[in-house]
Image 1 (cartoon, rainbow, N blue to C red):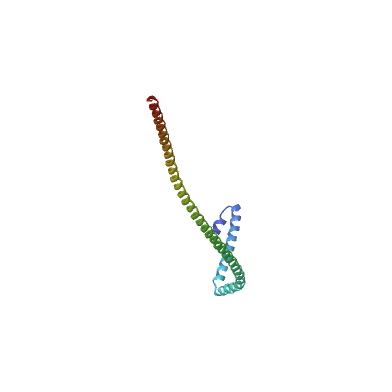
Image 2 (cartoon, rainbow, N blue to C red):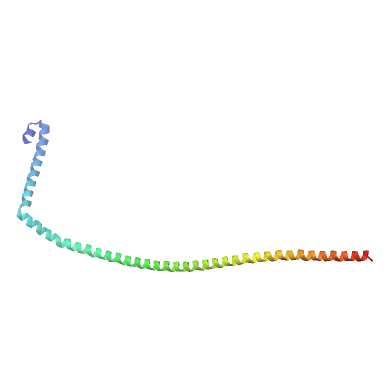
Length: 164
């Protein structure tokens, strides 16, 4: 690449050579870094620096853990309170259902009584109708008997008057 960049025109040549130098410097830095990390000493150094972070991370984790435990305890308390509320609501619902059952039984009993009363009213209505017909029939019979007797008296009187 170096040879190709030198054979180009002077305006382009200067920029390409500068970039080429940058790339070579970056490559050399990366090679040195790789050798340093790949060496056994670097491995121990990484572990030691990691252990120092473990203590600070451990304290942070303990703080987070205690906050999580506190949140968990608060959630447990809320769940217990919710459960208590649900149980109270369930008891109230059961009480309401029992009251409604009693009211239903009362309404059914009243309905049956009303049905019985309605049947009795129907029977009494039939009896009264029958009595009314009999009264009317008896009036006609009594009127007929009276008319027959009056006619009989008139006939007897007419017979006696004419035979005298």
